[in-house]
Every structure is written in structure tokens, then in C-alpha cells.
Image 1: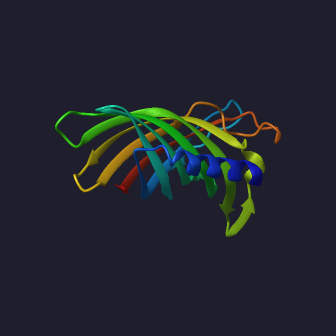
Image 2: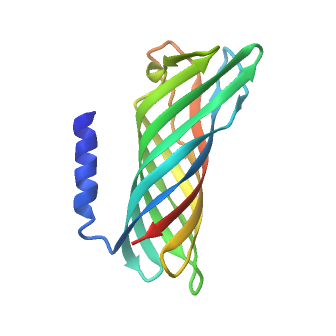
Length: 193
């Protein structure tokens, strides 16, 4: 996994040579999961996490650009159902590839695209105990991302996005039959350099 992370970071940095702009962004995730199973039912609640990263921007046309990103994303959910209480938190290294379209003569833009996520950690906190829960998850999460952005002339921008898993993130090596999918709303602020 360390080799993969080094490869991704080196590729991202070398691609920056050809980018028309780059920047940083940070904000908060409000995340949850959807669970489908025949064996049990839970009603999870959302939790807050950190979302921070860097991005490159390649202009394809005056109002259209391609934006790859590299970010840390903290996610998870809380459960308080039928005597079961606890919080499950996960962290991912995410790689969104977003197609952005600006609305002419405004600072408003929309974007969408796929995202790959590499699981960095998973923790289960229950009854005052914290346990490693990484075996409960697949090592990758493939998601869709869609959002809105408002940019100011000096490069400052605000953005809101929604991400949703396209595949089950629950590991099958634990004998679980649940289909678990991450979903998350992110509120971000950043600057383009």
C-alpha cells in the first residue's frame, strides 16, 4: 500500500507541471451509510469528519475544465438502535476526477465525476472501547461525486458536494451479508493559486 501511495503522490505532483492552476481546499464531511441486509436492520446517524486536499485544474475550453484531486476524507456513522450504540469511523485517501463547467459571467460552476478511495483506517467505538474495524471493509471505495462551487476573482471559492458509493464497501471475508454504501455531504472552502 505504501508503494501505491507513493506512486499516486508522484504522479499527481508530476502532472502539476502541465496544469493551468492548482490549489488547496478543506472543510467538513457530514457522512453516513446506507445498509441493506436480510439478517438485521440498523438506523445509522450521520457523523462529522475532516475533508482536506489539493487539486490541479486543466482547462479544456473557456468554461470547461478537468480537475483531479488528492484528499483525505474522514467518514463514518453512529448507531443507537435496539440497545446497540456506537460510532464507526473510516478514513480514505480519495482521488476524484471531476469535470467542471462554469456558468458564463458568474462565479458559479457545477461539477461531477468518479472517485476512487483507498481505505486508510476504520475504528469501531462502542461501550468506551475502540477497536480496529478495517477487516470489516473492502480496501477501496468507488463513488460518484456531484457538486456546486462559487469562485471569487482572487481565487477564493466555496463548494458543496455530495458523494455516494457505487459499490458495496463491506468486506465479505467476515461472513457479513450486508450491503453497505458510504454517502457524504461536504462543505468546503479553498483557494486557487
